[in-house]
Length: 28
Image: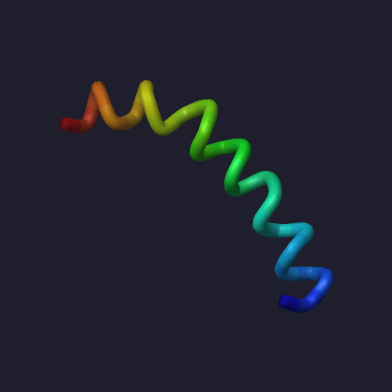
């Protein structure tokens, strides 16, 4: 992985951990 890809991946993981429960419950 390039440094840029790693930097981008971290906020995406945090976003999924924080918002996936809300989005999963509301969308499903």
